[in-house]
Image (cartoon, rainbow, N blue to C red; front, side, top):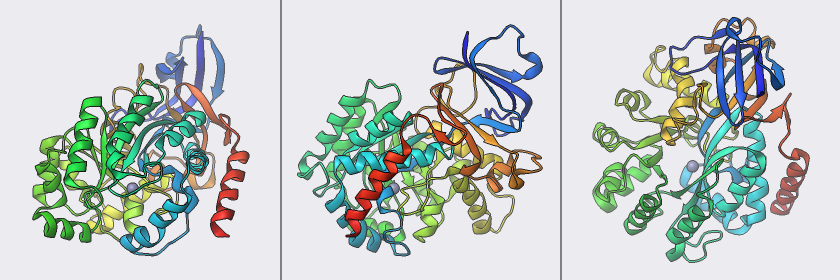
Length: 435
Ligand SMILES: [Zn+2]
């Protein structure tokens, strides 16, 4: 007996950019995995399931993968908008974090972020923050798949009072979570301007030893690139490369200020990139050379960054923004077609996070992480093809979200935890912050 059977769907497997919609189609799920999928005419009449979902009028596709966020920062959403990155970070975000970030704040605010992401069809997220054990616990309670990375920074941070302990603290976090099936632990060096060469090398040695990913914000602003050049005589990418930090388990976030030599180095080392167009636009840092990355076969995923610099965690909106931004930036309407963007938010993200064997497409044997999106709405009528998902859909169109074979949202109601309680807790924290 199957656990879940989805029927009559507009199936979008996204196994490649060219993969067509199968309509009407079915998906069979047993345990945490996809057992079989295909056209309804191929569904064996003898198939029985504990639960059947009729997905008539709905697109069924792989859950979206948010390659980069700082989930607990939901508390700081809208706290300081319309500022340059360094002013925003140093005068607003870092002081607020020093004062307000506790394990309880991290847990409730990450859970709120999880709700926002589940309701927008995100089934896997890569997070980086402090007290990451509380983020991991929140995601686990929410049923959200994650790569959770403990932050490393060379000044006293929440939960790590002595910066000399920052790499060891990350190692302890990774050891504690390495056996979990839903949460993959990792480490996150904040940036080359907040982590010394020694810290970067120690963090890389530690993540290599433990077989996990190392994330880092890299080449986000021109100011960062200029500072790196002044201090080390190298671009941020060449600086990391000289330190031996770049390899196929390094995930570089942003990568806006790269020259062709930097791109060649990332490609040669097999390093992955997560691009965050809405955050880059809001902080006015520039446009990442995405087509140049893709032409070099650099694994690229799409991320929202924190909702303090976006200000939302909706990957549908992020996809639409990415497609439009790179067109206007290149003054070429054929740049970054919608189908390529759909790949970035699914298979690309899975590849960048090292999870391609498990998630990123609807494929028998892969984990059952998928979303059901209602197309019977004015903005999605008529539904000629999947490009509409990039240009007209938003997270609000998602009806059901399934992770690891488990229905975590049904008819837009979160089933895995009490959303009202979570919003109440975050409002209480915000009241204290505003007092
Ligand atoms: Zn970030």
